[in-house]
Length: 108
Image (cartoon, rainbow, N blue to C red):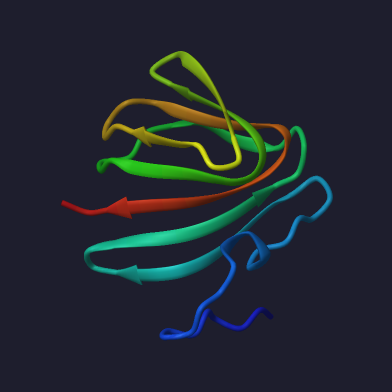
């Protein structure tokens, strides 16, 4: 089991979650009543089916390339790019090539 990320110590986000064949791997960085920060690694072709969330969520691509569809409109993002998925709007993610991302969701 992976150890949690230690508060007060620097870390490299893209190196803090690893790829796994035909899988989506996640690692929680922070979770509290105000929100979450989670790292994800998607193998090529993997994704998350269309869904919605009650809060805005920001995605930062750390490595690779992803297609993020929001309200039926596809957006292709690569390392260093960011998109905000609005609350209550259906969205889906697919790995165009394997990719890693940081998901930040603030409740409220």
